[in-house]
Amino acid sequence: MRNSLNLIILLATVAAVVAFAGKASAQEQPFRFAGTTCTPTPYLHCPDSECSGATVVNQGNVVEMKTRRTYFLDYPCDLKKGEKVTFILSLHGAGSYGNWQRNYFPIMDYTNKYRLVIATPNAPTRAWSAADDEYLQNIVNFVIEQLGKENIKAFWLVGHSQGGMTSNRIVRTDFFKDKVDGWLSLSGGRLGGNPGRGATFAPTGAGAPGAAPAAGGATPGTPGTARAGAPGASPAGAPPGMAASMAALREPPAADFSFVYETGQREMDDKGVPETSDWAKKYNCGQRRAPEEIVDTKAGYVFDSTRLNQLRPGWGLLPAPGKAQVYLYPDCKDGKVVADVVRLDKGHTEGLEPKITEELVKLMLSAKGGKIQQAR
Image (cartoon, rainbow, N blue to C red; front, side, top):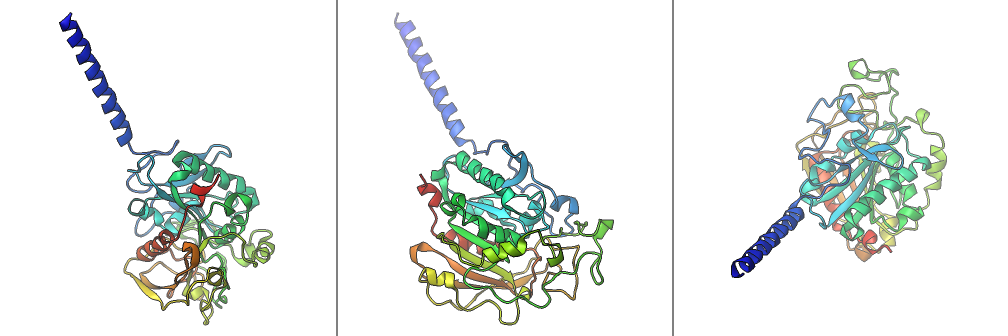
């Protein structure tokens, strides 16, 4: 009898140990978004040079299940369930692709260090419109549902060119206005007063006199085999209704959020970025500080190979090392961050260099977040 009792106790102890070990093992497993894989080197990351056209036009390997459209989702491969992260929705410009955007503003290089979750979608027409809003909302809802709203410290929109205009539009909508903690505009418009446009900004259309031919025999107007695609439409090829959309966005949005504006020096006229900002005034920020200089010894990954023209440096030339100036409006109320960032001797389409990319990430993370966490 005693032996039987001892055996029962032993078996119960072993079962408890096995159950505990199994539970502990499950807790130690890294988190994975449903329907995704995670690799230490980001999927379809461009090399330091000669990124192929086939790479930058890729639409991504994650499927948005309601629209069946794909996108990219980058996150730390060692992410733990319940870990707090910053969520970023990054939108490409007109004429571009999601993977060009990922490599133009390569924050995927900093997912591990800064615990970022980055969704980079694609517009089928290569220009965003209200028809894409459901798709974008579905992506945001998926990330929130998978992570849990309590684990999203902050939510930022990032948009290059027309992707910036789209960020400006959607942040005014009911879905986004109570979720977005900040907007980073990459040459996508400045809240609080825009700089003048440089005389050499407008691109020369592919195949036009003075335009570089598309590399590798590619069709003009599509990405060649150099390090880029065509990230922005020329005025003649602008998406329908863009002028009307721009006019509608001249008034500042009513929503509350931090705002960082980044642009290339050659995109602007000689006056540069205005020294004041109405958006900074909205949050009672202090006077703009003297610029902090960021030096990059490494070039970005991509450029616009279809419109490369030495006579149009405002549109963008080849990637190269460079310097940037960060102008911060300090002491904004409610933990808001307002800043201007100018990349010296750069145009609209040279990919951002690593150190200035990281500095922009730091600016985003320094702002107060929490809107999604507080949502009902």
